[in-house]
Length: 498
Image (cartoon, rainbow, N blue to C red; front, side):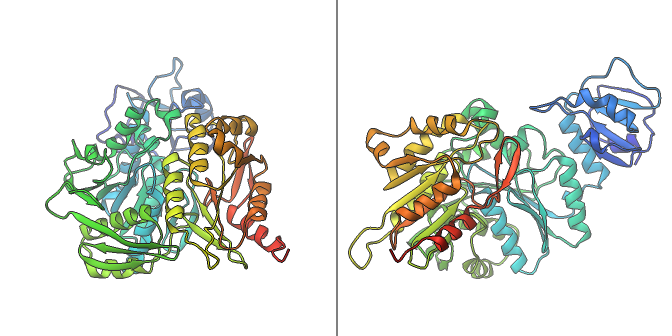
């Protein structure tokens, strides 16, 4: 594609060189530059792409898209200066790949908790309805039955357009993607055309990146502000900031609710939890009584969001509910691992205070006296990630202590921090009473094994924080570690007879 066509509708500050030069490849990674590449210099949180411009030119870049023109410029290279390189990259990527997002029904899901569950449930639902679908999520990217490893909740705009092009080529008609707050701020969704947007909820998270909670809210809202008039904006009316998301959007405003009068008089989706147990959830959805395999009130919201989005995409209400009733939860989301002597293990991705409280409140409500009339214990194994929002660490421990009979604080993904320093910050959140029922075990495997040794039949062990992840990130190295498999192994090796 010629540069002039590639940069259609991109606001340019200055150019130098041949604007009719042919571009055959786009990248923001200088290591991937080859002859014919347009290299986009993006200022990141760790490094500045402008410092890699000389390397990109040495590797054969045809053009450089940047916010600051270099003092020395090669005659054979075209330079394009823009005010916002990530935004320009998104628009250029959409042009380069022929706007694939306009050729599928692309639905974005944003919120603190529930993004992966809602996006994955939508993918499974529409697949079961007979469509070929794509998925862009924290857990994995997927084209039909083909799974592609995911490195970010929301990929960069070049990767997204490339994946959407692959999805189109393989016959996908619907694509469901998570839209993180980071992605909105970093313009990773620039140039994409959405058929709909869904808001799940917003709670304390990512303040290390956004600085303030107000900035975090604005980032989430920024997604809905960008939706076109042809799209729908579906929000959780029970979240006190749910209706804020709709304030400036030109998209069709819709809402879902389990308890409040929702925002729209047309197309509003109402639900009510009738019964909630360890093996399922019974709900009233728009006056239809339905039993689901998913568990917990938080999943009632997820199911209602999925139902509402499906109806807004033109699907039959009865058929949607029928298919949803048989759907299993996504990997690592309230996933159960049960021992031979009936200890119930639950592995969940809960890594924010609100998510952890939701899961523990659900477990508290679900546990029932066993045949001896004894209330099962709740044993929680939890940690916090390193190089992330440190303010939530004592809060996570406080919540674990409040809702659990025993608490084991342990390492999560310490990354480049000292695991014990993280655990000491968590310990600070424990009350004197809760401190007595808590212990700290840095080694996560040992912590899970200890929880199993402490448990008796019918007790519930929650292993929180990592969910679907199959690694532990320590000093930049990802070591094999799967909470679900470690829990299974601990159950298998435990001597339940003694």
